Length: 447
Image 1 (tube, helix red, strand yellow):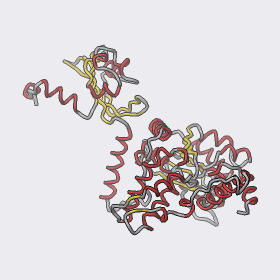
Image 2: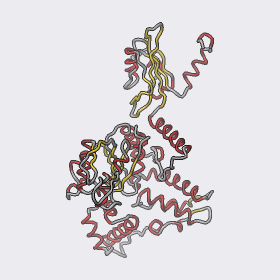
Image 3: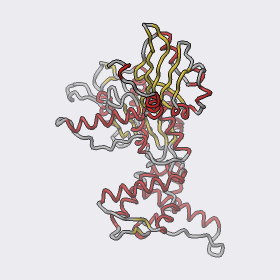
Image 4: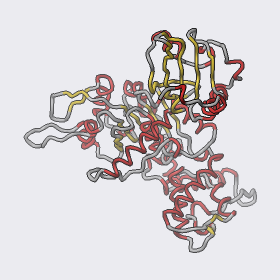
């Protein structure tokens, strides 16, 4: 179609450029801005009249428009890091009679999360259509699934958007139940490996004598058959080592070699194989404490901790509590097939005043149980577990000394923590106590 036959009025073209989803910029052969739409100016926090006529690299961070003008080569779906996030941009040279007179740029996806979310949705749809594809049994979490708008959570999300496109190892540090796996999955699905496997290995759940084979595989021998390990299966994708502090020292040596050389050697095999993985680790206790007692290698720690994200416990982000509770509540009543359920005001006060040693996971379990234990439409405190709904006992000088009151509170906290943690080691980590101090207190209170 010839352009002269289109005959679009100028106001129509202007409306298209101003209201389209994309952001637009046009530069001349000197790389000065001759047009930029208002939405782009709002994002850049600049007035359009101040941007017009200026060199494009003075207005748009990390721009490469001037390179397109100079080289005449187009950039299609090129990653553009701007204002703390990655975007996908197109940059096209403008030619008249074979001569470059400027360039046209547009932001197609305003951040890589939009792109990966769309890509992942398409892949999942295709998998459902394919009769040979088996649906995944595990939940797949994206960054938007992490609820909360506190400054701490916003900062973690911003960091994830910055580091996800890289292949750098990431260490997630936080108490049990804080949702570290959700953050690990968010990193994977924002990365260029999102179409490759994400495999989780719980280092504490697999016996130490089996963990090496589980990770690195096993070569053929007189007593064993050949099998691939998780590292072979995740090649090209992301390996998530949950509770890496439980990894035996000999396995730590092999993991360090994998990170340094990109090579894996199976048990009972002297042959090395090249693999390409991204490593994400989690721990519910400071690895520096394990280094001090000789249970974790210092060189491995330095290799995995360059990017460390501390996931805060629920008690430190109570400004997010209402949003998290509301989301979990509506999810629970939907799964239970119930409608029009609400929390009584008293129930919400009890939930908010509890200290949640088991964090998000404990909150989710409590809400799910309360939904199923309630026959009517209103959830009252009697549907909550004993450790959550029990009343606070105030100190009375006439009944006990201050030391006795403090000991009573300490014993109560220890007892409640043991109820929600899977083992004593985890309970000690949740309370921020060393193993020796924790066991001394258990002995003191006969717990």
